[in-house]
Length: 319
Length: 122
Image (cartoon, rainbow over all chains, first blue to last red; front, side):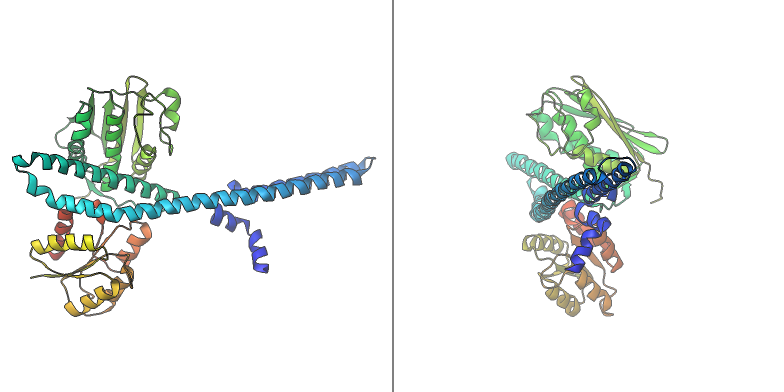
């Protein structure tokens, strides 16, 4: 009982445990502060009033009564806040569990797909080949969605581990484009890879960087019009490798530019109701690039198209 | 023939990877929980252990530390094969003496077989 009361007063810890924010952003602390301010100002008013004539007791009592009411309201608000935060925490936890649960069947799907890959390349198996490619592309997409969700919950909990290593961007871009054959065909569009034939490797987290490229490529395809061409350029600029992707798509309206890397932000454009997505892609993309010591940016004009680019440091260790 | 003990509670994954490894000429002994797995490592003295982390009866972390504690098995390389990917998990596994750590969903089957070959120095 006593320890419970004491814990109520340990504001810093309460803020950390239940809201996961600093003291100055914590509603518990802010409401306490509000109460204190009201009490102090009431007392000040009392002293000021008592120096002059009039009836200081009554005005002070009134002010104290007001302060008490404010504190009660504050307390109620804190409790409702706590409830909301708890619900949101449970949601994140649920998302995390679901994602982990999905990974096991997805792994099985991925493994079994990769194990039949070589047996159906004969030309008479064209139908199977087609089905096989679709299964493979879709499985990879699902693994990406789940990995994205897991990464988002990791970023929120502040426990992302980057696994740095040597990463060949050109090789990876080629593979990613090859896996988009169906999406491109459906839009009668093409992706062209420009730049030097060989490019120095970068120092990055291979899986996450792949996810970054996939996100940018998928966005370019998604927001392109039919019969358009997307151009990817890779080039070395000093001790950085620059990746650039240009599309002639619907573009991003100027007023949306500042929100584009925000979580759950999706530009409102003519494709809003046609395209699907989690709205977390670019948020994660920016996080990954910046955590790798890179920079990222974009230019976009509504109705003309977008250009997204990022740069990553060159891998300098000998292999 | 090199011997591998594969500890994994998901039977589908267990079957698939075992088959792929057997095709490469390895002898694979499977176990579906931590206790069974540790017993297999102790009795079979394999050349390599493939270990999942979330396991019934005894979790992978405990199995790993038991393997490394016992002089008879301490030198056996252990590849941790899991879908857990947080900093604490990777750090703990490395500190406990695992040779390498692979996130299952990020690898295709042939890539994992390659890693096994690499660790066994083939």
